Length: 434
Image 1: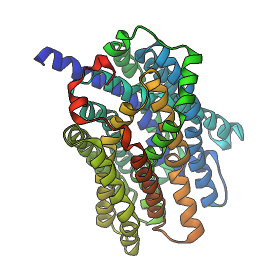
Image 2: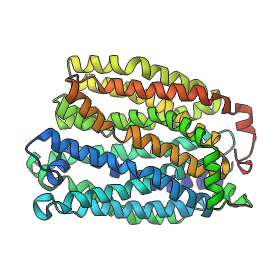
Image 3: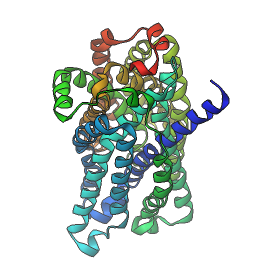
């Protein structure tokens, strides 16, 4: 590849991933400041109840993802990857603006939590296709033999959002008092997200349609798309099970970490944000490395090995951490989970783009990812919070991780017959749909 083509590819990856950054940044900010958001929109004399309502609202956004995956995924398979990605970014922008600007419960009463919930549902609807659309686009512009590396940047862009949100959290906690943060300081990260929307819209507007999509002479209608989805729905369920581990582990080590570190382990917010920042950096390191490794050794060795590692180590690691919580132990456990997550996800995302039918690639991928996030990952903070409260066992989130790993391992074993040989993956051209 000559230097000009390489530069064009790099900028294409950056532009397509930019909206993915906003989607994840927005979700992370809500998770990081769940306690403050709970007090603002769901006030209660019971702190656990207030936090639970905020976390449930965080999770409620994920319930709209399957709907968004079907509606927007079908739109992208019909009208093009670029058109779908522009639409999701616009919807995301409306969602984040609505949450950032809504007055609290003390000002407008019950309307406040209802508007916040509506904003979260709109965000979830748009996010239903965002991850799938970005992943499919990257897989279709990748050079032969490098799909794992290219597609890994979908998840890698999310880690930049995690790190940016964590750095911002550290700065705000240094500059503002806890009382100020609880009163209105938590809105600042949301407003910053609003300010970068015009830049991201401009970047994504300059995207070219993927050559593979343009080369297809037939673009299926709604009826054809739905029939193909019905015929391949068992495969979508298997893919959903595979994604369960990646979504549970991701939201456990990112969105839930500040709450877990401060509320459950009673560490300082500064310590919790530093750990979250390190987790984002670790994820950013491992995702492209393992995506590239999967191009060399195949997807299955990483997928099977990582699910087994998570299944065996998640709960013991959490037991060790909660037996004597400290900043160092939280950092060690989170970095270990980050390594397993990054290694698994680096191979997983590209694997799913390879096994789903080409004519409904965006819809199938988006629906599988959305179902997993809706039923498993998105509610991980709320489920973890409830399990700890119900059992009194602070390590119990590790069992939730192990359950997700068991689902992932079972699904990988079911799907291994559809894995493509490396020599085929490397040899065929993108125009052939591989």
